[in-house]
Image (cartoon, rainbow, N blue to C red; front, side, top):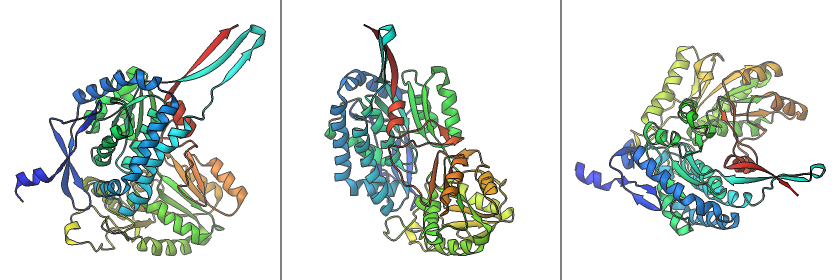
Length: 490
C-alpha cells in the first residue's frame, strides 16, 4: 500500500466544540496495540482549541444550568439508550483502540458507560439540602447547591469511555458544562460519543471534547482561568503537575490516582473462591486497572499451597488476540508501556526474585499479524523484598508479587507500607478479623472475600498518594456543585 493510500485509510478524529466537529492543524499517531500499527490520527490540540472549547462551554452554561434537573435527566437517559443501542460498535472500537479483549469491552466497559449516565441522571434528583431554624433569632438558615461553571475533565487510557462518562455524567447532571480531554492513546470512543450528543438533545457547548496530549491540551485546560474545577484520573506524577498549574486559580480538584493494592489472605480463607478472584483482581484488563492487586500477602501455613494453585490458575488466564472471545487478556496499551512493565520484571530477576510463570518463561501463540503487538503473559513473582521498587511502585501490567506473612499486625503493616492507598482486599471467614483489618488498612476501598463489587452511591477514591477527594453518588454531587448558606430573618 502506498504511503498516500495508507494515510487515506486511517481514521481521522476531530475535536467537538460548540456542537460541531472541528478539524485540527496537526495530529498525533494512535496505534492498534494488538498489531503495533498506526491506525488513527488524533488532533494534537493546544491552547487555541482549548480556549475555543472553554468559550463554547461558558456560553452554554447560563441556559443549561437554568434547566430543571428533570430536563437534564431526560437527556442523560437518552444518551444511555443511544450507547446501549450502539453497544457492539462501541465495544469493537474500544477493544481495537485500547488492546483490551472484546469480551471485556462488551461486558464491562460499554455497559458501565451507559449505566454512568443512567445512574447520575436519577441520583441527582434525590439529594436534599440542609435547613436549620433559629427561632430565638427569628431566622431561618438553609443551604442550596449551585452548578460551578465549566468543568475540566481529563480521563485515562485504561478504561476510556467507562471513566470519561463517569466524569461527564455527574458534571452535566449537576448543571455544569464541560471541556473533556481523553487520553490521546484512546480517543476513538470519546469521538463516537460526540456523534450521539445532538441525537440525545445535548445543547451545543454543554459537552466539548478536545483531543490531544497532556503537556499541550491538558496543560492548557487545567491552567485556564475560566475552568474553576478539574476532575482527573491518571498518574500521581501528572496530578502533581495539575496541582501546580491550577494553584494560582484556587480551583476545586478531584484527583483519582494510582494504586499498589495489597491482598491479605489468612489461613482460614476459602481458597477456591480466593484464588479465582485474586487471579482476576491481579490480571483483569491486562492488569491495567488502578484497583488491580499487585501485592499478595499469604499466611505462612497456607503459603506453599496457595502459591502452587495460584500459579496454575494464572497460567490458564489466556493472553491472546483481543477479538478472540476466549482471550482473558489482550495487549498492553503501547510499546513504551510494555517496555516499562518488562523493566520491572528484569529488576525483580536482578534482585533474586523468582518468576514462576509469564514474561521470559511462557511463549504466546499469536497469529503472524499480531507478532508486533504489545502482549505480555500473566507473570507471578516471589522472593522480592518489600523495599524493592517492584513492590513499591505501580507497574500497571499483568504482574503480581506473592509473599508470606506470620501475624495479623505484620500483614497490616506490610499492606500499609507503600505511598499509595487506593484499595485492598482481605480474605478470611473470621468476621471480627475482617472488620479489624479493614479498619486498619490505609485504603479508600477495602473488599472482603470479593473484589470490584461497586455501589456507585458510595465514595470512590484513595488515601495518601492515591488521590484527593472522592467521587460517587453524593460525593460527585458535592464536587460538581458549590454550597451556599442563606439566612432569612422573618
